Length: 373
Image 1 (cartoon, rainbow, N blue to C red):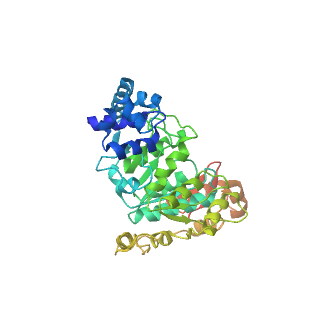
Image 2 (tube, rainbow, N blue to C red):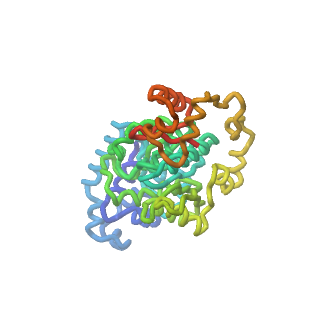
Image 3 (tube, one colour):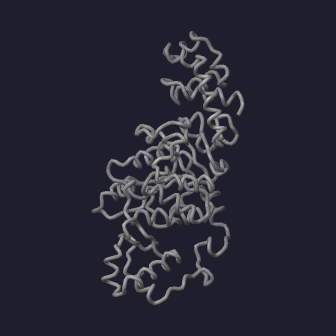
């Protein structure tokens, strides 16, 4: 961590300056050192209020930035600044890229071809199934999957990518010392091990509501396109889609049941011109030609979407019977399965366990089960 990193940290921490204010100053002074050596009158000439200029030049800011550096070193966090060669190239193209990024994990995947998958925190079994499937299939073909580590669709997207042993990026609306929601701490560790967890907020920033719309521009900015799986009328995920359009990125949506509240967002996007997505190919078709050629280049049969006998799952008669009782868009409670399968509880539990091992079904909270796509 060098002096320039410290200077960028100082610039990013001044209240009232903001990301756009820093970019405006950098466009004039070119380097952070020149900004921090400017006089109050020079900064005032650039339109900075006196209180903000004094805050920018105060020794207190340097002390705080130095403490932040120490916190990062202690927690194994890499800081990427706008001047860092490893800073995500696609993110740098947006109108207001973050001044600094706090990163844990493999920073190389931040410059990998990426698709963002976002959606409702109150996702249905259908939405979770779709998000996992899309993420799994895109990640298996070399695309990184980006999302926000939130409950619901975000969580499903990260898990799908991890299932494929692919790369995934989690963008937080809090500091890296405050993983939110708490139940996703283990997931965050898995993402860190197989991808990257990032934030533009200082390490100890709590997950305040106003932070999440701000971080959404990073989710869309890192990606070639953003796919919406489920979102209600006033979902924050709709902000991500609008930002993707402003950033001249592709926008995709998975259609949903018109009677479902969570289908409002994706169905609206499709009406307004988003690409309707039924499978991973629908997304890849819209990517730049060079990217598409890389993804569709001759691969092994499993990666190409084929399923030779070597990978075909063999089911017993009892397993086929239970599988037919499980839809992919609705969770079924075990009591209902006991009634419809005509098995006793020990037999049914054994079959359900085997189906989970064969990756055919998924158990949800409350002893409910859903068929996987």
